Length: 130
Image (cartoon, rainbow, N blue to C red; front, side):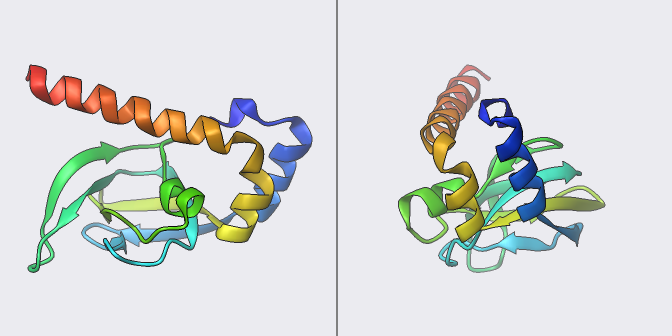
């Protein structure tokens, strides 16, 4: 994903990031929350899916180190469409605020959208084939 960035943009990206650590079963965000951050998993695993009224998730996808999420709400200006929860013992996340995301990653927004669509297609193919 970050290969699309120029060296200067990568430096700006690093400067704009903060870190957050969450422990197993902690939610990073819930379906319906306002989308304020873009996330990259630095360590650990998270599950993404629809959350029921008891706080259980119907897992759509599990993401590990190097994966990113949260861009759809920022790009489209909508609320979170899925919930995200930590599945490993802990997860270390890199975060970009909405403003930093727009300023720094504006040039690769279309790539992020295509990356997400491709992953959705891959997941539907895999789940139908299993």
